[in-house]
Length: 138
Image (cartoon, rainbow, N blue to C red; front, top):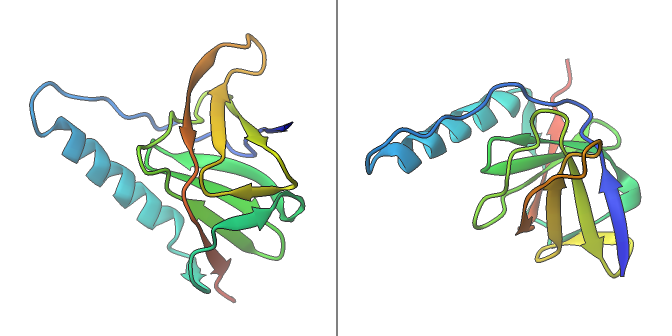
């Protein structure tokens, strides 16, 4: 099994704080969704969600809260991945470690979020489908 490390190209500094009460998870989710919508404002979806993408077609990644991971692709393309149960945020210089038996990242592959300097592990999650987007022409 291969381990591939992906360091974020851009660490988002905005953090989420969870408030006490039953509405807190829904508020965090809405906040993450609005941040994702802002990230995708200059992009358009270019096809159906893919179960796998080639790792050589990816150049970096960043998270949008715990709801989504944006993988930077080649040629003005990005892939949005929404782990079903969420995933720890990549903020603060954290990176992804992906365990995969191939050169492709696929739905169900396990990713760990960790600090590459200290080695502290912040948790892991299973990847979802990869939805392709392309930057709009200007």
